[in-house]
Figure (tube, rainbow over the protein chains, first blue to last red):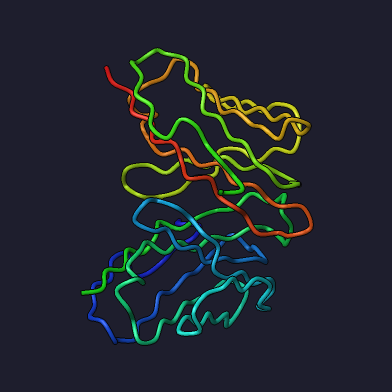
Length: 114
Length: 109
């Protein structure tokens, strides 16, 4: 059983479209995260939710909107996609809120904007 | 300047060599994470440490809080260790992770 699963694995779409990436974890964790990895492999936090509440919202364009329907799910919706949104997006989860919690990562969603 | 710096950026080693990857950070932290990203793209958490040393198989991670420095060592390296190794600082009073730029390791036969 996959602990943190993201869908889709690959997403190719045109500029201006709206798309969503889904994330589910079956670890019973309270905290979930979205990270963006750019073409130079640099990872950066985008959002974090703890018990369905938004805890971290980094300086991300408001075209990106996370939604957590329950503790096990954290989806990412992106409006009006731009070329610069091309990246790999990783979902992760941890047992609880706190910087000393190990994080479990999904396999990533590679988003390519044409 | 990034708050978390890694060196070297790229490392090539022969099978069996002892490998060290370094991570320096400039912020107060509550924990330091080491992650491994394989060529297929998935990310695995290797270690999380706030003091001293941790060992898992052929991997050893150490941290010196006073010097704001951590190292990841791989003993008896093997081609399957080829991956990108990333350190991430869990900044004190702020639960988000700040990542280093990664070290790309290639181990050849």
